[in-house]
Image (cartoon, rainbow, N blue to C red; front, top):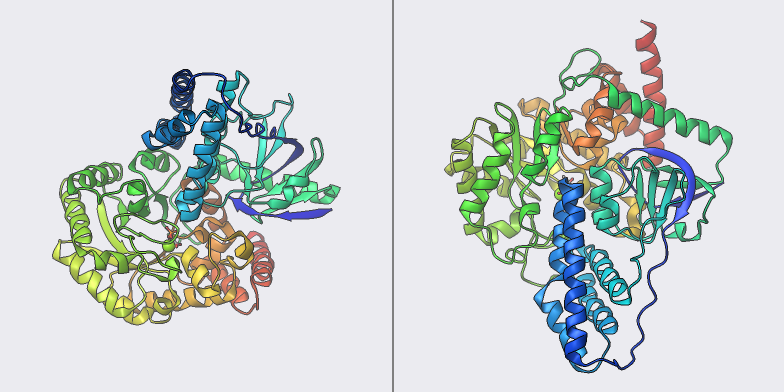
Length: 559
Ligand code: PEP
Ligand code: MG
């Protein structure tokens, strides 16, 4: 048995035989074209248009987030700057195939150099180029294999067009050697609840037909598993399936303590599905996701429309909207224009908004207008707050616009350590465990080489969360969790034991967390949390929680 590590998406586990995705088309040779530049241009224009239409059609068929992704890809295909770049090469006598390959490759380099969200779009661009070149050559674009039995799909990185239309009866799990947690493969896998591990470099050596276990919760692909490992994996998969079919109830512990289960959203269009999955409101609306591709700051009208649509989906329910969190993994050109060596430590989040206060004020105006037009209970919070002074600044500005509940995210250790003072002026705190882990362990959350440090089970992270939980209890203020940690069912129990009063997560994680909370009382949760705090590293904290949870759960079921 060997273990291949990557970044798990979601919590699923699946097993089955490997089927590898076909290798990409060989790169076209740089040889002179036998056609005139006009003839080459006409071929390329036709091929690009056909690919764009095909991507749009696939998008319409798939719906949801896949449609947005594929429409964005279709726009990439027809991007005028790219067309100019291709034209320049064709006029220099290159073949259409080579011109497309070369122009897309240089654009890809620029995107990769930008890093973060845009860097992860590079794979989307490669896919568009492959599709156009395949069409010019009159061959089929490389796609998902069809071995006529269920399989674990192993690929370098999946194109959105392939992920969107995966046959979920056949694809048991997805493993990619490239791509990070915010790649489109990851986003779509999360949305479709496909068991997936991305960035598992060593999976390049897997061969067709060999059996593997894909454990997304651990981020591990196990090759040549023992019978016992296979049986355990099956047991977990069955438990998840039964959680998914359990009745949808409000989040609560076994003793009836309410723990509202909320959704993390980045687009109002996803609200209906979150409601269907039992979200009791929204714990984190990432407004920057609406404007990642905008060169200009969004207008008040654009924003009002989006926020109104969101709030309308949750009448009478709590909706926590985060003001723009620009920078590092989510650069917004209109807020982050300076080059920074360490953007995660730079002018990001509230710091960037404060430096362009007009944008913050316009966003608060739009939120106030949307609030006035709807019946949701709007809470507004600021990202990346690192001092008490920033907290006072944000809550004061938010109140100028009539925001009734103004809070801050705790994502930086300094804020966790001073949570008692932070909560003196903020109405609530919401802990962003993704960044809190990144900053506590000093490990870039997007960097594969330090991914093993990015583990919210680390007791140093949990001790900081305890500080915030304590401060919230002392001041009688809510402390939510909105990082990925809330989506890990056992860790969710720990977080409640540390004082979290609500949990917000990707809607597809709600069922698992709901089922696990119901197995433990508040006293149990505190005992389990205490066990993790005594650990020295993430692995022992997780193991201690499992042992303590099994013990308390057994006690519960005997009573
Ligand atoms: C976090 O950092 O945990 C968080 C919820 O914010 P984001 O992932 O958008 O940075
Ligand atoms: Mg964050």
